Length: 179
Image (tube, rainbow, N blue to C red; front, side):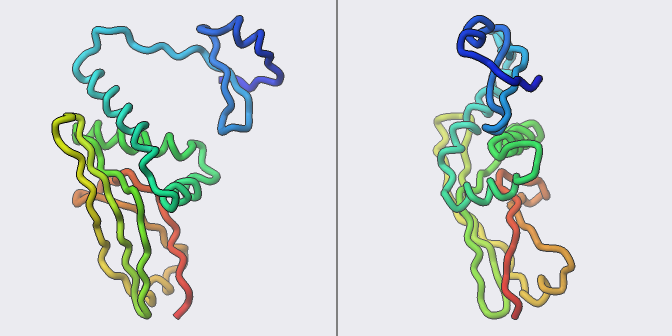
């Protein structure tokens, strides 16, 4: 990848198919070698990986505005943009378990006087189109506010499975008022 100072539409058309011009994070114009897609016939693993990638990219549009804002905040100052982190989490989970990771569509922090819980809305998709998708709610264990206030660093939370593998959810900064 190389930064580009000035590029005209004529140059883009002339180099189409050999050089890919695009805006990195919507700010910096860059150029790279034109990406090459593997030619069919694909191996079964390649075909499944492409299907998972397609599902990951299509599911980006199903995220709530609240979750979308959390994704944006969680990737500020990071090298990758949030859609790339989202897709990377999905692909890493598939690589490890050979199934699609649950996706957090929305979250809500529920506060009481002494504790808080986080309620997630999760989406479960399947590569096999005959299996219907599942949307269900999950709730974290209640955590006492006084325990959080004793922490020296800000507390972040995200969505993990029973084995401790991160699911497709942003890292969200917990902001609570002092008791």
